Amino acid sequence: MNNKTCSFRHRVIARRKGRGVLLCTLILFVLCSALNINARADAGDLDVSFGSGGKVTTNLIDVHLARAVAIQNDGRIVVTGDGLFAIRYNADGSLDSSFGSGGLVRIGIVASGTAAAIQKDGKIVISGFTLSAPFNFFVVRLNIGGDLDASFGSGGVVTTNFFGGFDIAQSMAIQGDGKIVVAGSAGGPTGESHYALARYNTDGSLDSSFGVGGKVFTTESPSSDDLFGIGIQSDQRIVAAGLNFLVRYNTNGSLDPSFGVGGLAPTLGVAPESLALQPDGRIVVAGFGSTAFNFAVGRFDSSGNPDVSFGSRGVTATQLSSEDTAFDVAIQADGKIVAAGYTTNPLSGRDFALLRYNSDGALDTTFGTNGVVITDFAGREDIIFGVAIQSDGRIVTAGVAFLGAAEEDVALARYGPGPSQAGNICIQDDRTNDRVSFNPDTGSYTFTQCGGRGVSFSGTAKVQRNQCSIQLKDAGLNQKLSLTFDSCQKKASATITGGGQTFAVIDSETSKNTCSCR
Image (cartoon, rainbow, N blue to C red; front, side):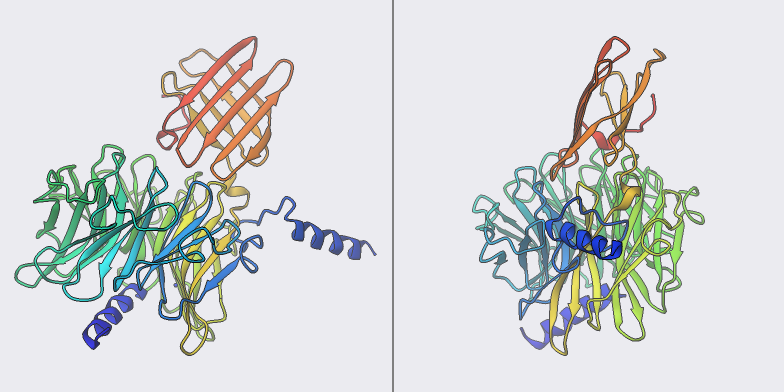
C-alpha cells in the first residue's frame, strides 16, 4: 500500500472514530454454567456462552477493523472490515471451519468492507470501497461456504466508479426483490463530493431503471458529505442518512419531494453515522451530537419531521465522557433502540459502549447500568462499528480491540437481552387483524378477536426455541394453542381453540404489526 493510500485510509478511519449452602450453591452454579443449562444473560450482561466470558478476538496480522456484522438464519455470525475479509463464527463464538479457510475468507482486493447482509438464499453480500486509485464502490457476493459467487458480477465482484474521483460506499440494503442498493459519496466531475447511490440487479449488473445507468449523484446534498446509513421502506422508497441530513429517494432514484424540502430533511441535534427503520415507518438515526461528541439518537416521522414524542424535540443525547460516538443502531422486536459505538476512558483509552433506549427516547434503566454498558478488552482503543440483534434478542457487536502496541484485533462481544427484550411479541392475521400477543420467555399469551366480536382469552404455553423460531404449545382440555413465530422470515401462524371455537392467525409480515385492532 503506497503512502497516498495509507494517508487516505487514515483519514477515513479517523473520521469514522469521531466507541455449606454457599458451597453447594457455588458448585451448582459452576456445573450449570459448564453445561450451559438454561444460561440466559441479564439485560446488558456479557453472554458467557459466547467466546471467552462473552468476548471474542481474532488476530489477522495485517487486517485490523471489523466494520460490519450480519447474522445468518442459523445463528452464525459474519463480519467484514478493512482489508476486505469475511469471518464467520459459530453461534458460540468459535470460528466456523466450514467457511473459507478455518473460518476466514480474504477477498483479494485492497478495500474496506463497510456493510454486510445475508440474502434470503443464504448468500453473503459485502459492500464497501477500494483503498487504491481509482477508489471505487464495490460489491462482493459469497456462496454459503465462503467461495466467491461466479454468477455475480465478474467472478463474484463488482466495482463502480462515478466520475473518476474518490467514491466511498458506507452502507447497503437489499430490497425485497433482491436488488442491492449501496450508498455513500462520490467525487463529482469538478472535484466536489456529494451523496451517491448505486443499485445492482441480482446478477451484479447496474440497474438501468435507477438514476442514470444505475447510479444517483445528488448535487443538492451538502458538499463533501457521505451517506452513512440506508434503509428500504415498505413502499420500497429509499431513506438514507448523511452527516446532517436525511434524504429520501423514489424507487427510480429521483429525490422524493414529499420528504422534507425537496427530498432532504435536516437532522438537527444529531450528526448521523447510521440509520434504522421502525416497523411503523419512523426513522431512527444514531451518531454524535451536532454541538458535542456524545451519544446522540434521533427519531423522525415518515415525512422527515422530528418525532416530538422522542427525547427532546426528537433527539436524545447522552454524554458519557469527553468524547463519545455511536456508529451503529438497531431496533429490538419490542421497539427498544440499541446504539453502539465507543466512550473514552482516561485510563484505558476508548472502550466499547452500548446504550439502550425506551421507545420515548429515555435510557432503559433495566439495561446495564442505567441503560449503559461499557466493555473493555484491555486495549487502548476498543470501538464498536457494527451491531445486530439475534432472533432470541441477544445483542452482537463487532469492531476493533487494540490489544498491544502494534496489535489490532477483530473484536466481538455478545450481550444478554434480559426480560425487557422478552416482552410481548404480537402476531396479527393478515385478513381479520385477530391477534395473539405472547411472552417468549414465560409462554403467557392472549388471543384477541378483532372486528367487534368480543372474543378474548389468555393462557400459558410451553416454549421451544431454535435460532430463528419460537414455538408455543398449549394442549389443555378447553383451550389449545399452536403457534410458530419465525423472526428471520418475519412471518408467523397460530391455531387457537377456546370458548368452543377455533381460530386461525396467518401473519405473512410481522414487521407491519401494530398489535391493535385496526
